[in-house]
Image 1 (tube, rainbow, N blue to C red):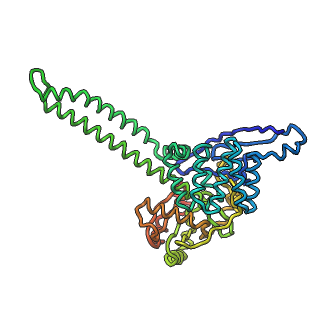
Image 2: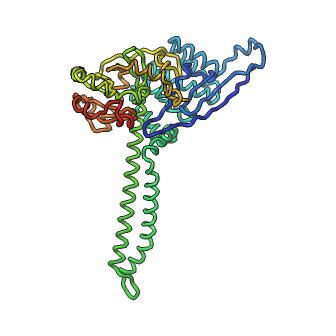
Image 3: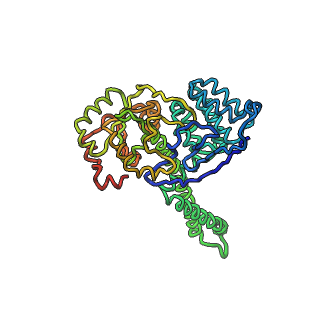
Length: 446
């Protein structure tokens, strides 16, 4: 017999105008099992489980009893060995054995990983949707897991992400709440503006309500009737005020939705993987404050020409922290990553500082940051090209650019988009535009 002790630690989720949603923790590369030592479910909550043994032995009958826990653990073992079909069966069995919420979340999530591995995007999306709605799965987890890299390149993921961004009964509101927190930091006076819009609209409405009877009396005329022209002007002013303030309120709502969509795209961008010149794989977010990535996307001929011209300005671009990221439409193979279940990351990235609990402390490690800087060169290779292409195409749609057109996108040191353009970049202009890394403007950009 065993007792399970559960302790929940809440970590303050830090937002700044320079950061986007951070939902990664690198301290635990283990698979997702509801009874692992450390299970990371989201960026601000860690649930820890530990066994307290109350007896030195178990009966054979107890050892043979099938539970949701044992099915999830067995499924993870099978998944790590590449036996995806058998693992899928175990996760489905776990869901049929009256699991508790954590076991159900684990089974659904890892079942989605199996479907993603088999290319079954709709089934994977259905599992994740249920886990998000009913078992409080954090959407950031879906963005982080390399086992879902192939799923994130599918249309089903885009639909799921859009649903999560909008929120609602079918998928829950946790992801939207996270996005709105970041939006409020970036636009701190939006709430104040909306308050005044509503207050002025209400005031104009009350005034109009009192003016309408007076207007009828003025139209009818007679002794004691108010002046018709003055009353009509007052009514017109109130109606105009209501129209203006309602229009401003709706415009502010539209801008907020656009901002939430951009934050969501930034979150996706921050999780895209790169291979450095030393063959180490890192996420783009890990290079924040260190380099200015310039994404070169298009046909092979266009990208090659852009790289050739960039070589002429190599020294100047390096002084400005430029890191070239070529993305050729339709080319490149997906990097094969060993499948180990929920929460696993590429082994090459484990030694690097990442996002998650104690992030601010880890990023202060001089040795870790120096090591990372030493590995960065002039050009990096994209990992999971389909994910990169998907993000670039979404960015093109948002900016009104023809999808699939040759483009370049310059990022800031804080990871946000500085600007973009069509065709081959004008490197002379870029050198003039971007300050050197040691300049004051670069320090303010971090």
